[in-house]
Image (cartoon, rainbow, N blue to C red; front, top):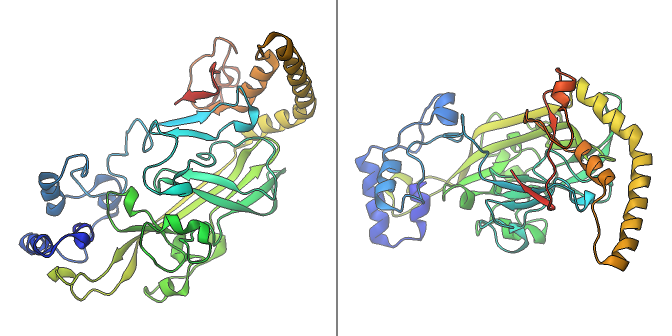
Amino acid sequence: SAANRARSWNYVKQKGVSMGLGLYDQDVYVVKTAGELLFDGYEDNMVLMGKQLFDASEVPFDRVGWFYTRNNSADLIGHYNVHTGVDDIFKIGSMAEWNYKPRTDFFAGHCGMLNGSAGEFYPPGLTKDVPIQLFTPDMCRSLPLDFEQEEEVAGIRGYKYAGGPRTVDNGTQFPETACFSAGEIVPSGVLNISSCRFGTPVFMSFPHFYGADEYYLNQVEGLNPDKSKHQLYMTMEPTMGIPLDVAARFQLNIMLESHPNIALYEDVPRTFLPVLCIPTTARICGIAMLIVGAILIAWTPISRLLAQKRRDAVNDNAGTGHQEKTLLQQNLTAAILVASAPEKDPKLGKTIAEAHPLIECKMVRLADSDNTKS
């Protein structure tokens, strides 16, 4: 990381980094336990030196670990602001702000936009011809997932949206993804997220470089990409936009490359070294399926009533200049939003958890505006 940040520095500064690496007896490779690499972190003299040389905000940690400081934390990489759907049901779940901003500061142009959802729920009425977007805070960006096929999950029909070549492209195959490259031109199949990780040369891919250019497979031994084990996908109930089956599979890679003015890296060939895989999976539970089924049964008459209420509200608005939120619309929105907080909602009475102790969820309190801050 220190050598990577020094690439654009002048000769004198680069030699200073080279001397620092030699002084602290640093090596190209380190051997650490899984706990140290993930949650516990490990001490690194170069990190401690960086905290002394740079602004504290540039090095906001004192140990090295991918999930260091995340255990027992109050948030998941930042503050989320999402649409509740109170004013427009078709915005429900969509990202409005992240860290109090309507876009990220890590990618230029349209690549910095907050597209799609954080994954908990999506707007109703998903279609096969429109991809869904998954916002991932670890990458500071949204990932497009394209429709692949229809699937049945526990008796519920769903649309499977999967990550493909466009998801992990950096402009080499799809020109519109070039702004994700962050100036590092590499073969397709890895995502440069170094700007999101304090300048560390971190690249994300699918596990075992699944779907990536052969260039990466030829660099490391032991890789065996397999669609059934390494594909990223989300199977969604299309009417309600609820995830039924999710496999968020990623691989973290570190880029090593030669630095002529830094002795430790003088003869290191460019290599994308896999560090860890993150095979996160989730599947809808039995109780939740009963709730989804009940909502689906009631959806058609409710949607018709809602459409009629909207027409009536528009007509009223033409005469009075004020469109009221209907109780039906509020109740429908509340029926869709599910969260894990145990509080009572004064408008809805008992929580689901109180009515059915086996269900660890509740209806979310509705906000007066279209957005509610988490």
